[in-house]
Length: 203
Image (cartoon, rainbow, N blue to C red):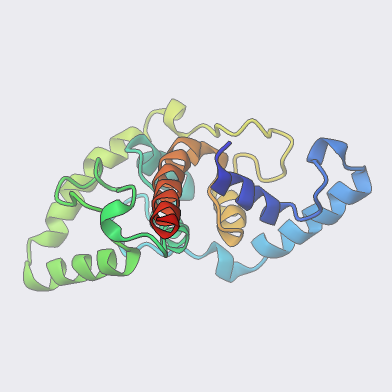
C-alpha cells in the first residue's frame, strides 16, 4: 500500500480503528458520515465538459472506459491535481497518455478544459472528431466484464454504485479501489518528487 493511499484511508476513516476491529455501532456512525457526503447532490454532479460523449453522466461506463486506458475520469482529475499541487507537470504521471495520443505530457485539469474549448471554438470539425474518437470508447462498455465492480469490499453499501463511490473517495482526496493501479503510478511520481526535493535540501 503506497503512502498516499494510507493518507487517503486515514481521512476516510479518521477513527484510527481498523474496520474489522470496529463494533457495529462504530461502523454505523462512520457510515452515517459517509452518507452525509454522498447525500449532498453537489457531490454527485458530473464535471466533465465532453457532453458529446455517450458516457457523460454515466459514472459506471465512464469509469470503465478511463480505467481501460489507465486514465481517470474528469471528476477524479480534481483529486489528481490536488495531490500533485507541489509537483511540476513534467514530473507528474501522465494519466491521459494512452487515451489521448496528442497529449504527450501531463496537463492540469483547467488547462485540459481550456484546450477542449479552444479546439471547438477554432475548428468546426473538432466536435465531430471527438464524437468519432468516443465511439471507440463506447465499445469498451458494451462488454459486461469491463463494467463490473472490482472492489473487494462487497459489504460496502456503495459497492457497485460508481456515482456514490467516486463521490465518497473524491471527498477524501482519494480514488476508488478499481483505480488502485493508476493511483500507484500517480503516487510513485509524487513520492519520487518528494524524495528528490528532500535530497536536494539535505545537500
